Length: 395
Image (tube, rainbow, N blue to C red; front, side, top):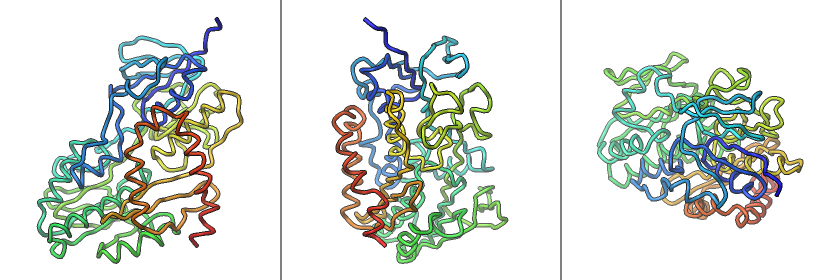
C-alpha cells in the first residue's frame, strides 16, 4: 500500500474544513484548530440585531469526513523551509503540503479607547458576547446619536457595517423610537461604499432610511469619557452609543521565513494560486491571506477549491469572485458580486435575495461536510451569476 502524502491544514474554518474534506481520499489530512468548534461568523450580525444564536457554531469534528485527523491545539510556529510546524505544547509535526487558514486576529487595542468602547457597547466582528452587547444597546436606546464607524477598511465581510446600520435602523423603527435617534455611518472612503458601482445601490437606501454618512472618516481615537471619536483625518464625531469596526490583523503565528508575512501579520500569498512566495507546497487561504478580494467565507471556500485542484495536478486559479449576501432589513437583501475583472454588480435589493441569504445560512453546515454533493450545485450557481453575465442584466 502506497503511503499517502501528509497535508497539514492550520485552521478549521470555512476554507480549512472544505479543503480537508475535499482532499481526504487523496492525502493523509490533519486539521489543527485552536477551538473544538467551527464558527459561522456572519451569525454575529444576527446575534447583534435579532438575538439569534441558532447558526453560530457546530463541533468541528462533526463537520470533517471520516479519515481526516483533528488536533485541537494552537500553532506556535511554522517553518516553510523545514516543512514543519510547532504546536503550543512544543510538539513538532512535519508535512508534505500545508495550507494556512487560521483566520484573522481582532485587535481592539490598535484604536486608542476602543477596548473601553467595546466593553460598553460591543461590536459584531469579534465575539458572541460583544455581539450580545450590541443587541442590548439597540433594544434599550430611546434617543441620541447612534454611530457605526469603520476603523479598518480591510475588515472581514465588507458589507457588514452597512448591514449593521440598516438592521439597527429596522430595530429602532420597530420599537417606535427611530425619530428620536440620529444615525451616523462613518467610513474611510470618498463615498458610502468603497466600490462606486455598488455604492449606487446602497447610498439611495441609506438616504431613504435617513442615515447620515460621514466620508473620509477613519476612526483613530475614542474618548469614552466625553463620548467622542476622532478620525485619522482630524475630525470629531460625538455619540451616545457607538460601535467601531475594529482593526483586523493576521494570525498570531511565527512564520518563517519572515518575508512570508506583511507588517500586519497577513500571509503573502499569490492572489491567483494562494501559493506562499515560491513554495509550491505551501498555501494561505481565507482571511489570513493578503489576497485582495473580500475576506468572506465564500472567498475562503473558492480558494480552498483552487488549492485542492492545484495539488491534484490541475491548473486552477482564483478569479477574485465575491458573492457577499447583504441584508438591509425588513426582509430585503442584495449581493456584492464582483471579480478581478469586473466591479461590483448593481444587484437591486429585494425579498428573493434576502431569502437566498437565509437559505445559505441554513445549508452552510452541509456545504462544509459534503463538498462532493454541493460542488456541482455551486459550480452552476457561480457560472449563472458571473459578474460578466449579471452586468448585462443590471446596468
